[in-house]
Length: 466
Image (cartoon, helix red, strand yellow):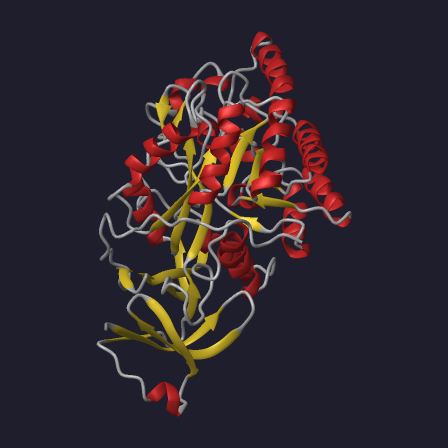
């Protein structure tokens, strides 16, 4: 039996803050005891980690990543190996990525393809959602089988006609099925049909720069799609999780639905909390680095997102990590913003940016852990194995220095991408040591993990329903 003791830190979970020592046995948390008590002092172990003056927090759960995603004729630049290593550097110990069903193919083929990409490559634990691109009777039956196997969430798109798009009838059928089998529908809520009209008109006017990506993907079209998704879910009697919410009007739709007692949930991402259309407007095609969908919004939307996180109208912060290099990938859209691959790097930055939000007074320490660790684990059927520090939980633990200062930069990050979306941003707080199932992955700012340590993790159904 291998034993590790973490001594002297402030243990912060979604529900508690306590100065406690943590005992780890065989990859799981065995016990907590107040620091300095006879019970804690009696523990012996092969390894002792001194966390004095530091936070001891659960490893982050990033419920929205896209490693190696094919998009716009290219692929996301992080592999499962590079992306999960970078996640660990940023204090995230579990990712949930998206397996993709291609039109004309089965869900199983897509899931098998993504399992093959990830198997033996990941530095941290991982799970999959399933992107459903082709709703038919066979697909609906497969959804039942996948839920039984632990793939319990299904993403649909109201955007990207001709690629991932589902019409209202397909969405309703999938929602009806999830109402029966316990799955959770995740929705990319933008009116893609209308957006395509606006894209065509903008390009015809010669409006080709990256900033027009944000201007054609209007806030009202996010709000309209969010409203429509909520009503379809209500008709189906199914829960709904809206991904990457960026606009205050969409937050208002979610708040209204939740006030009516509906099982409707919302996720936002650090880019919407810290970046804006000012970045999209950067000259010399630099704005292309910030092209993602939903798009960055004017800065005034940020207050509504922070408020939503405080009032629990938004429950989760994920990254939607989908990196494309500026050179050779983002540049595909020079002269036509609609050809810029959509996506930003961020899997390494999320925990630090949200700690900065604690420093800035936007959220409390416990809320930081709630939106980044505990709630994503509960939302997607991983709690209490993941997302908390409690006896029986996996020993996914981060020793976090709340006083260290750092400057985010492409020069120092570990994501496989040639720019940082937060270049030059100063933040307070930094990951020092990371354990995944009791094994050291980051040891005092050195990578000591390995590809293949990360295990595929089946999930139960949503544990967050009203």
